[in-house]
Image (cartoon, rainbow over all chains, first blue to last red; front, side, top):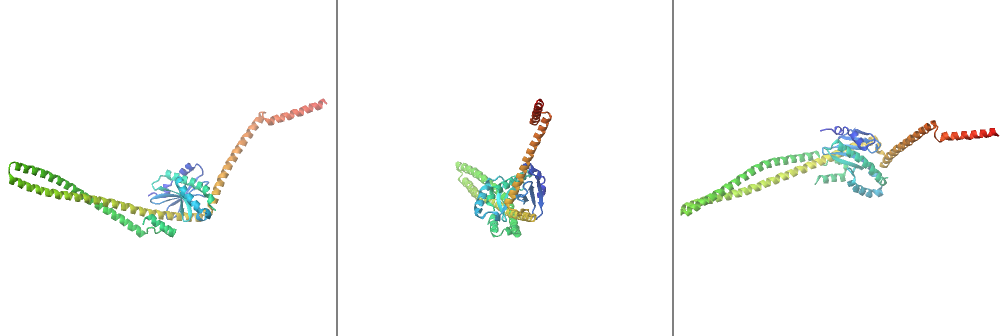
Length: 138
Length: 234
């Protein structure tokens, strides 16, 4: 089986073409399972992490921590996120160990172009969601 | 319990266990054994099914043959009766009775084979479903573990880089500020371009003796000359 890095080879140029902006860099993160960090120029604070299991390719963007949510607005925010999820192209909200994330899941047979589309959409969605939901955060 | 149910229970308990024990290594082995057993059962059921279906066809042919034989014998018996050969007719009638018994036996067998074939087909379907189910469970467990391990790696990476100690609001503001800076720089550059362009044009116009600056100088000179002339005259 191809390694994740091999599968993502050339992905930076594909994402750059889709976002028509800053440079994109791919950085593998050492660990037990393959993870590649995608940093998009101008959006360095919102990197996207790509990981693969035999079943799927997962692209994750970390948004905020549980502790950053305004306690009085918490329920409202959670419901809003549930309502927003189906409307958001290609991305869904989730939570991993107390961190809220936006993620896109793809078939493990997805092409580079499809992965690039997902990451570009995820980056746009993350920035958009952060802007829209910042009022619920401390 | 479904795999999602198991995962939910673990999450409610402690996420930490997600990487390890949705289905432990032993559990995965058991599932994989069950999958193998179900596959073997399917292979055997398929062989059995072939045999049963062959017998079913065989009995169908035997039924046809018995029916044809009965018709033939009955015609012979009728002929014997027509020729008043009563005892001969009775002899043939005994043969017909034999064939009828055979027909009944084959019909019963045929029904049994059909039933067996259906049972085997159901068994194959059920085994297929069980394999799919187990495979999905193993896959989901492996996927959950993989995601957990990946997010562990990411968390550690974020932690060590120190970059994500920033809050989401701060991140957003920095990105926005960078965009604004870029937009400001672009509009500044645009303004500069325009100004430089205008100045160059004005310089060219002045060189050619056209434009307000040139005229202003000319007017001043005119005025001064007039005053000088007036002074001389006085």
